Length: 391
Image (cartoon, rainbow, N blue to C red; front, side):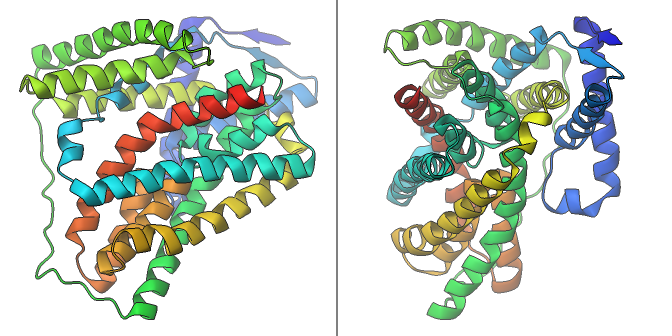
């Protein structure tokens, strides 16, 4: 039996998948502790059920993915709005050094992934999928670059990228704390802050006109980004369409900053996260689980190797370049979180160290801001470079 879904039905299924994932996440502390996104939970369950249907010749599902790309491009446009030069400038010289280290590590992750993929005799592009695409890029990046990898012959690129990114969320939370604790004990580091500043959670009223203007702004930035995407093609490199949208968002944000235009970033974040959840739900519920089975062992080895390399980098590079003090140790923990998982992993890692050993105001401000901006901007460029070199 073939179940065909049109555009509305596919989005409806994505909504059900998200709601299922949210319900399960609310009941299972493991998913909450390691920041496993609700679309990942629900999407994987859906894709497993479809896999069982195909394997038993019971049913197959054909979905319409038109809106999947639409939501993906709007999400990356919204992500571009986080790339503010004015905010980055506040991090100073320390932020610049951290940015260089974070970008350099993106290259290292891809070299590790490609090198081990070659050792196992699998497609080197899958090594990139298990490199900075999934590790520093996260689930969204894995689902976005996957089709590009598959079009170039890396069968299962999407499934491998998403699975690796999901595993990375777990690794990112497990590795940061031990690295920081080891550094703190070895160098007898102590917090120099007198009191921890607790950030108050702000509540923003929802105004229809203001929210609608934010929607229009993202759509306009995506429109600009579509032409930036055309310009990127002139470089001879095969940039995914959404990279142009990312730069479109960044361009609009920095023009607004320069002209002192107050953007409603909380609204832009809401729109971006909504698009991300719908995109991920649609992408994950259509994963091909069968393509993951044959590569399970090489993938586990490569991802564990990525975790070890990340810990060594944080211990020897991030800590030393950040000043070899207590804040540097906290940033090392945060770098493990964002280098293997996502920003929430980094914040949680730092918070755990701070709760036990005292506040680290410099680390708390610098690391999330710098890594978010530079990884968002540079990772797609580095990934695209590796893909074009290996294609």
